[in-house]
Image (cartoon, rainbow, N blue to C red; front, top):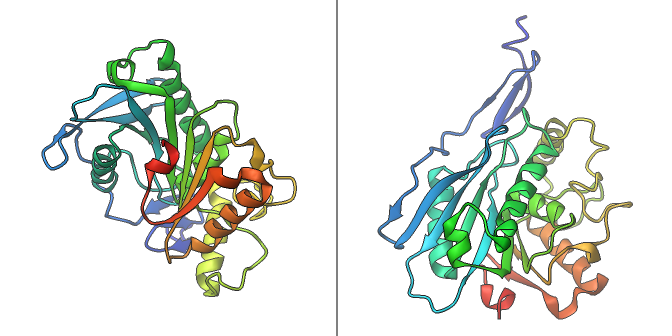
Length: 286
């Protein structure tokens, strides 16, 4: 048989791998759209190159509000199982316009490089580079929307699904920011919880996908995917002042709940909260 056409691993509707090493992304949902002015939210956006040598970039959003003070800054990492999605696609662009408007904040949507061609830790490193780029503007920098409008005492790191995994991991690195929002985090563990999904095909698919995303991983108790694994960094080391964990009733809810409970146990106390679906920035920036 032709290894370039023989399927090795199929994970619809996300991605398919062939024995030759070739892969194809299956989703047709992620269509890029241009930056610009959004008439519904009155938010303006533009694209910036962070690192020309790697192509790491971001889309920045600025709400149209009368302001007497500087605006909070949200650095956002999108979802997509590490293998799909973009800061420039229509789904994330629409979400970021609404988030910037409703939170009255500058939003920076990270365009990190996707696995499997850019395996972990590349998505972590790219996102951390963007966070550092944003924070560096506290001393001045090339982006006027940040320099002229941003409140660098109120920087928030927000991620959804795989993006939530990313923001958790880079929040353990050496940069301080105000608040962390972990939305429906893409976490796994070998220990099955009673309330977790029991579909063995789905579970096996997610676990196998992780091995393609992170070659050489120790498995699903790798601290990169299981933040509560033995040897994982202490959650007291998250470099922020407040944490919010958002979940819904979907596949990833249980791991988000466990993450929240562990934050409470390890001493975050009143500086950690949980929400269903909605982001409540009044908690993060009272």
